[in-house]
Length: 242
Ligand SMILES: C[S@@+](CC[C@H](N)C(=O)[O-])C[C@H]1O[C@@H](n2cnc3c(N)ncnc32)[C@H](O)[C@@H]1O
Image 1 (cartoon, rainbow, N blue to C red):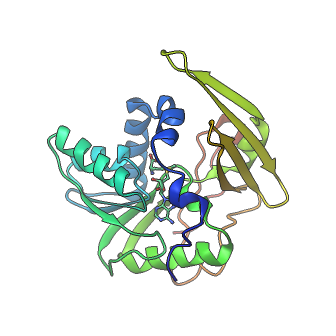
Image 2 (tube, rainbow, N blue to C red):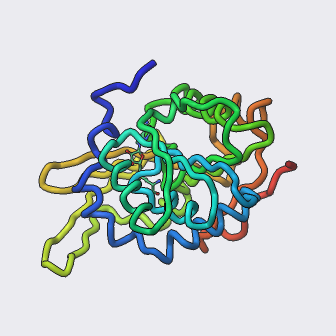
Image 3 (cartoon, rainbow, N blue to C red):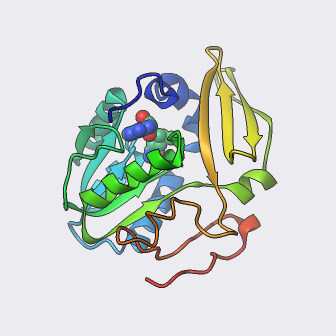
């Protein structure tokens, strides 16, 4: 298989990305997300957790501080180095792996996998999503759990802002142009002087989970619960049987 070298997500995640989104990655938010993950995944002391598409490690490091054995996997070597350094700065340690989410080099190993901040929605097609899910499934031990944090379509529609910006204290103005494509159910974003472009799949919860049906409800995964913290969505949608 191999990662397509011209795929947008190969080069997109660098310093510019961190500059534009850093203000949204607060410590308080990461703490809440990690507490939610630990609860929903039923993590027990010393559990082996894979932070899939870990980026600079804002969840990996916290999970390691909580005593879990954490592996961060990402396509970006520089983000993995940043994650390791941040862990060391916090007197903890994580393992890191440079790999594509469709080629996780572990079998029957992790108690839980987390995939945070909509990274699962990047791939080009449902068949590529399915490859990622199969790879995740292989990496988990039997009974292991997966948490997918995806962009909620209803929320994205209700809160759509086409052109958005924020100013940093040094006066730099960061501008994002967003295009909501309901037909393909994707949000396309362009930002910065270099015109970086991303595209993320939106997932609707009202009509049930839109992950590849062959993966969900199959022998690979049993859906345990949906959850949404967004007030526009109301309460979690119909938890399924475990
Ligand atoms: C939005 S960042 C999220 C990082 C982290 N999960 C967080 O919440 O801060 C997405 C990350 O996914 C990584 N990524 C994108 N496509 C990937 C792929 N196919 N396989 C592995 N990592 C990938 C990027 O390099 C980037 O670090």
